[in-house]
Image (cartoon, rainbow, N blue to C red; front, side):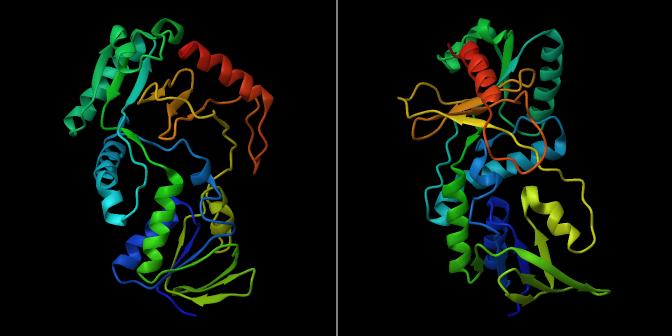
Length: 292
């Protein structure tokens, strides 16, 4: 086989790239070592925020939100995009000064964000206890939100296929042949060989392994981050809640589940998928302080 571009990795980055390139007429093949959304995409917090501290990230996020606002229509599938806002807790005067600087920069770049006073926190999210959060204020951007990572990625993959892209799952790339002119061929563990002009490494936590196939060592290290998902509840709040100091984040998903995470006491590197009780205990104690 031959194509213009081989993409390695079937998460949202790989599938969205397959869609964008195939839409522009390129011949694309995507290889995923497991199944679509089997990596970080299928285990993420699903948040989309514009509240960053550098101009580059703010502009990138702002333009991404514009894409997400029209993406369901473009892809012809409901991707579960909801704009309930992001509320980021401010815990002391030093954090408040830093938040004011961030908000000033964000607003100068066209992001609708503001500082909210302590009493407004509960107005935005009645479930929250500002005293339990140890919050003196917060920042809030109503156009931040979240999208369903599975619906989004599968919609991208579906449209990419309709555009002519080929997607192979359970196909691990084990060899990339290069010469002085560049990439020549990609081979999988199933014996599939593809000649191509370009290879894009979208393998996430496995991107370092892929890069090593062409003699490049990138400083990516897999690190387990745990999360909880509750049973479905009635709608009780709309925004994503974050604290940079405590490290916690949580939101209510479209189907009613509370999804959230926090740095665990036993975090360590490696391809680790088993949960830890220490994380669950730490998350539960912190979450109930924020939302008793």
